[in-house]
Image 1 (cartoon, rainbow, N blue to C red):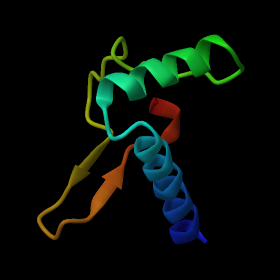
Image 2 (cartoon, rainbow, N blue to C red):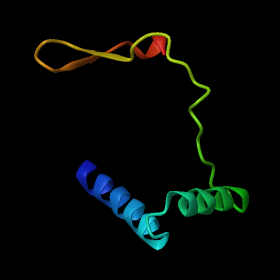
Image 3 (cartoon, one colour):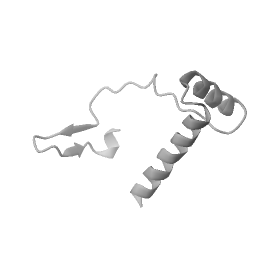
Image 4 (tube, rainbow, N blue to C red):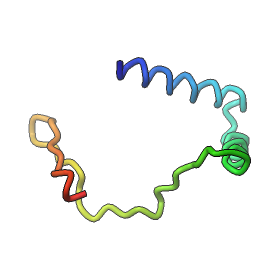
Length: 71
């Protein structure tokens, strides 16, 4: 199920990029216009600061998440 969702999201991203000739300036203009004219909110995480790591990898490469109540 997850793979299907990821594939669909990547296809949507590819379609939008293709429609704008893979031009970053045109793509940003399109997304800003879409945000301005509808209920499509673009999330800006630049103001978010992480003060501690969310996950840390051990030597085997697995990750352990901190408890949700500490988020």
